[in-house]
Every structure is written in C-alpha cells, then in structure tokens.
Image 1 (cartoon, rainbow, N blue to C red):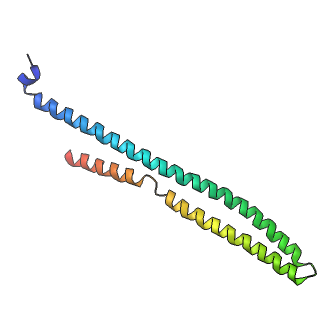
Image 2 (tube, one colour):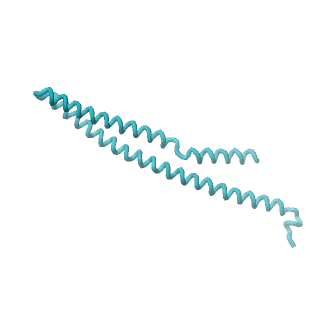
Length: 131
C-alpha cells in the first residue's frame, strides 16, 4: 500500500525531489564556476607577486644607480656625468614600467570572482521571487 498516494502527497514529494536535484546540479555548476575563477585569480596573484619582486629589485638598483650618478656628477669629466645620468634614467624608466604593469595586474585582480558573485546574486533573487 502506497501511503503517499493515498494521502495525496505523491506530487508534493515528486516536486521536492525534482527541486532538490535541480539545486544539486546548480550547486555543482556554481562550484565549477568558482573553481575556474579561483584558477584565474591565482594566476593574477602570482603575476602580482612576481611584478612586486621585480619592482623591489628595480627600486634598489635605481637607488644605487642614482647614488652612483650623484657621485660621478662631481668627477672631472662631463662625459662621465652624462653617462651616469643616462644609466640612472634608464633604471628609473624600467622601474616606472614595472610599476605600471603591477598596477594594471592589481586592477584586474580586484574584480575576482565577478561571475560567481553575479550568478549567486541571480540565484538569490530567483529564490526570493519564488517565496
């Protein structure tokens, strides 16, 4: 004897079962999306770390070269001064390039998990609409 059928709950249970299966599939999709976005975020963080190390190294070298340029500036020959300042300017340009690259990657990393957040917000809105 099927009590669910007798009590008229068979359709209710079937609906709940379908809803649970759909929820499980949706949850798996969200986890897959989060996993993909985490891989992208991790790659951006690695690039940011590498560029940060490069920026620190270039800053040290730039400061050393600027110091050397100041010392050489007081030597006798004007050609030595010009060369020292050009070398220091080259290091400063390299430092600026590394800084611009770091800021660019940092801006990209700031919007991590955007698709997952958007999808979860849409899901939450749909749940609220159904209630």
